Image 1 (cartoon, helix red, strand yellow):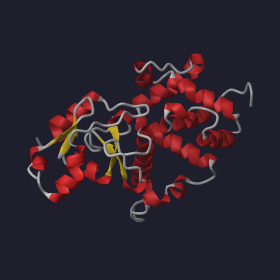
Image 2: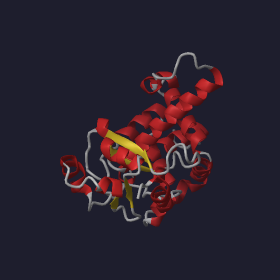
Image 3: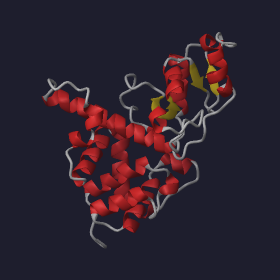
Image 4: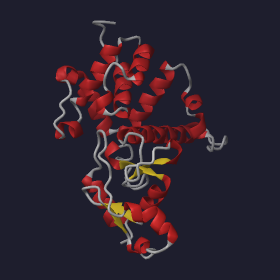
Length: 257
């Protein structure tokens, strides 16, 4: 495939994978990159290079002194800008294309995520529901990868117990639903406490307890589950730091002080 221009579909597939991998795995030994190269019929080196090209578009990495490789910037920047402008549409398109390359229908690939959609829902309404579930699955993959598959506060690494928790709730801000800076990987209990405003985080990642939660000091469950994290901070993510304005929104709007 040397010298053959990348198609839009291929550029989107590479971007899809870029968002799901930490920067440290953008190399030719990463299984996901090898798998994508095989699907696309391109060399592993070319796919890995394209992912590093995307890093040069990523302002989060640039702010941390990581520049990527700017050789493919002209090809990558339009896809990056499209993602920023309309994440919802591009994420779903990327997953649809990936399913097509894998030889399955998108509803078949995400069958488990779609089980509770009533069969009576059809047409445009069903398309919207499928799109929402597929995008939520993508968000989970992206956030869990960003935190190395561990709860950012407790270190729990059992996948079934992890949640890609939105800082600004899904229903509160459509534009930022799929922004990787709007997600924190938390265990189920910590996610529920965060979602209900019993805990929140300062800009430096320090955890804050609400007065309602602190009123339970001395109880066995508080000593077991919350006492150990009261002075903890979120671990540093692999690529995307929580957006401070999103954390402020949570403190001002969700947190039960």
